[in-house]
Length: 358
Image (cartoon, rainbow, N blue to C red; front, side, top):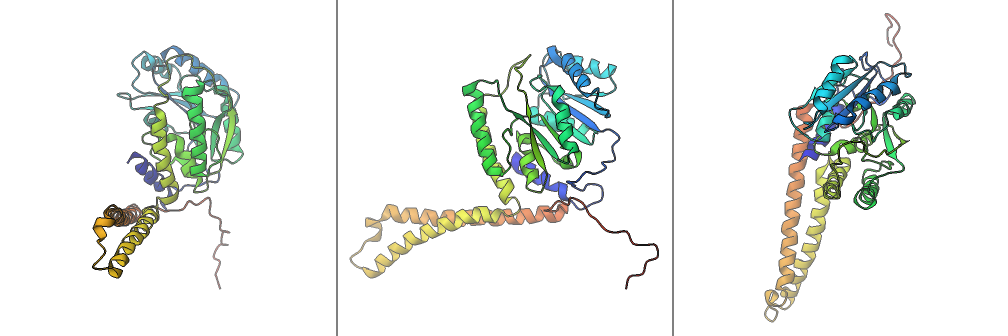
């Protein structure tokens, strides 16, 4: 359900109003802040000061107004007090303290909601992402890309527990979404603000934002990044995440291909079930008509007839589910005035003063 809400919230980007247009071209966001660096923190107390110093050093020669948004995701160590102290001494730092541990995706959402930059960069707070690579992301944004994703070319994680599952997941995500990315899982990404306007993240869906935005024309590229070993804390991900990712991949497929036309998804399988069930029941019916008195249908083919009946009932259930989905989709779009398209830009030659059209 979280993933469905994620897809619907992304469709909110396409509302046709003057204050919230999704534009893939370079636009003036109206914000004086150029760059917001969003960093979720969870039990990173020993390295928060080093992380802050590294980001400041990396941005020193960029000649851009920037801010750092530290989000404390319910840490149980001294991460919160340290980040708050940094914010009190550096007016470029905004400290957001969540009441409890909500998870990485929710912490990222909180940081994005409170960021004010025209460009938003997200990165982990454990120094596995090198802040000195931020300029590479900004360069690609300046080159016209809407989303720039990091690519951990040489990973230093456990080969069996992390790298193999990650490689399989990335290949599946690439196939399902049609987006040519090598590394969907990394948090190190840069976005134009207008791409994220109205996007609400749930569950673990932050890794799928590029895939969903790409289907509406967002320009995406990758930059190689280093994968540094953790300097503090421990990873909260392992082999158990594989099952969650598998479910997310199924939902991503639905969002990318059938969000606005659910009947095509459920109807396809419904028609297959209806055809197979009809063939089975039709075969039994014809045999019974030909040999009405000598042929006992349910004694000779009872299991087969049961399968046929179940297939027909399944077809009716799937078709009904698709019709309900179609009605709910139309109710959503008509009541929210959302649009199923994204406008890159609009061009019209200005009319001369007092011009009269003929």
